[in-house]
Image 1 (cartoon, rainbow, N blue to C red):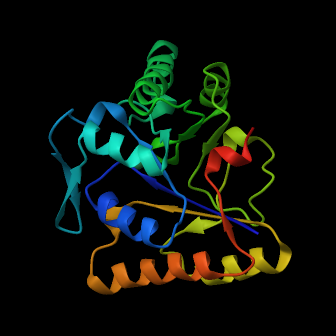
Image 2 (image 1 turned 30 degrees about the horizontal axis):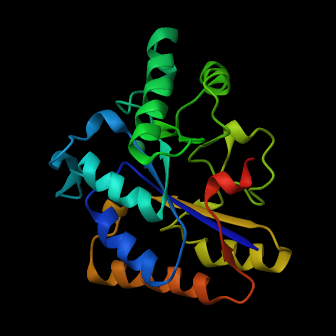
Length: 217
Ligand SMILES: [Zn+2]
């Protein structure tokens, strides 16, 4: 079976997570909202459970792109369904172009900010040349999707069904795709828990990590 993971927003904890991923040779994709990152320094984005959410610099994101895949999470993380057609095109085209320049690779994937989309956003993504777009809904099995531009993953990494979904995917030789934000990993116990999950998948004889774009040619 194939395991895929992706992490949204390009935040400080991604670097610590990336060290864990490298340790267990796990592939992953980071979904980046390019307009919310400064070139050389980090910035405060928001708070989560009273803790600051710090965005990575574009230079740090570039360093992530050496070992991992990047996908677009728009330019400014807007509510896409309320954007004008012109603004929508800017959010999709400019983020793709900027990440392609940053990483030197084609950007083929998208993650919907706030998980919001409609027919118009799906069509705009198609026109902009995206091959898949991840929602925040769950599906089991998750692959193949009815439309890759409305791709529902199996679960969030903190989902109670995580192990159940993984075991089901192993049994049925299906895709297991989870997602999240690394700022949701807060306590030492939660860091240990995600490390255990990554290690378990990496060492599972039937599991193989893939980058998302490898599924959508
Ligand atoms: Zn986001």
